[in-house]
Length: 249
Image (tube, rainbow, N blue to C red; front, top):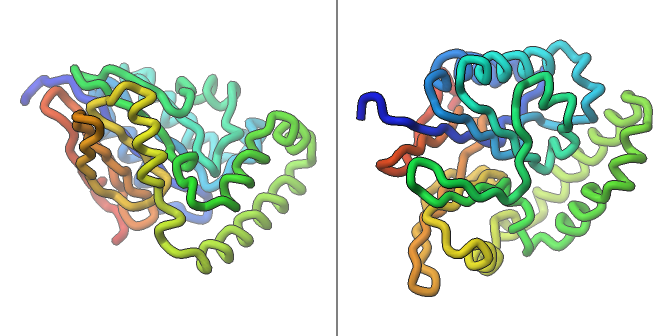
């Protein structure tokens, strides 16, 4: 419908200076497609990794933050959620980008829909090793210690974690790295059965129809931007999936 208010949602861009195509894709998206939206929600893993807000000195990071700020200043509200890769995004990045940092999960009323938003790595409860690691890296004491280390040492540590993670993932069955249905059900119950549940993390774009305790919920999974630029558009008529022009396949 012409003139209808709408919201856009993206996740798992994994931006890094060594992947300039994805960064160019995002910058074009922010300057064109996202303009005119009521809001843009980034549901985690905007960056491949984030070493702390003092890494804003990096020109690549500055370009992304400035593009987000330009979108915010154009009238489109920008909301960020931590992912498992960029959980150290903080106040300085938000001030530079004009973005508002949300808790995970986050409930919103968007265009008449009750919507629950999450990165959703907490729902991959079958992956016990990951959940143990997740608790450690989200401990404020661990984060505080990490952030006082020299930047080069932080980068070395994170790259080591990434290599170890990729090695471990190759040996895990696929179901372990997906959300657990019971964990999803418990979350939906705790938020009184929202109309829509939208999340990222799993890199498995799909729409799932959930019938739970006599209630219906549509679970939309955002795709990552490694294979294509995937985004959702939500308006009063519902949710629809789109691909950013120029995405690699």
